[in-house]
Length: 384
Image (cartoon, rainbow, N blue to C red; front, side, top):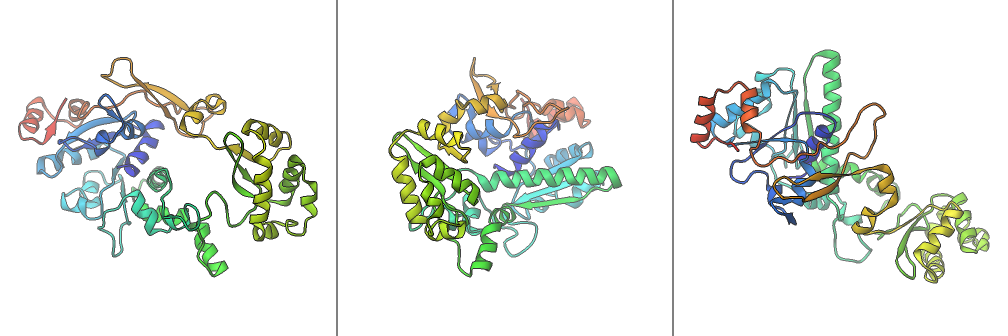
């Protein structure tokens, strides 16, 4: 529901004509996930800007044929079902490649293209658990918790997009298409890379550390009189700056804090001293002090504060798009998090209603008016 649409969102923002094939009975589940503003669900608006929609029942032979005919003129085919589903409906790689031999066939599943769990369903939270992300998230001794964003889903979509672009570049060089296989499971493993190596080197499993980090100190969240800040110190030079900013130059010669390794070992004492000082003044005060001394620090902000952040405005990363059919309603959503010097990556300010572009897409695929009406009459397509 998130990974596949994330991959195609990236491609759409980069200029691809993305045809979103949805079920005829309600379309993408994300359309029905709240909160809603009128007919538009937050998840759907986030992930489906700039795409075109066609509603097709792919379980029917005529629906399968619609998708295969679309594949003839497509550079990329991407599906995000669990393993085996595409074979069951006749839209596996072999069938699609028969229509266009050099197509980039992309499969994005929960557990990957092979193995004992190939056909199992999975969601972001489940994979966070399976790959150990939950085991290192939250505070030590607390109940299990997942990361508060769909980090596995969206990262899997990112990796899939990278794989697709790589395969397209290879096809440009050689003329050969290929398969791109990605999964939530593999993405979760990749996100756990440091922690997996930590287990091998340290001989023990890494534990949840709240906002901290097992490799650095001080590193984490500290409360002020009116909020909280994140401090990140990764070397001795930065620690000396921090001590100067806090008015505690003697900490630099304290045998407990002389090196990063010692600071990690004496984290509790160091954090307690820092917290005692920060709790005496405001976030704004400490931000100004730390910035003056070039200490890596950031306020901890909520969504409302982030939307008002002047750095966000300077980067122009939020783009406002209209919500069709909802009077003057709009949504401000993030564009891709990079800039190209010669190419615009602005969001296409459109959102597709279910099956909105079905007729135009079918015409492009070579269907006549009579054939289109037959698809509607037989419940194969739902055309707006």
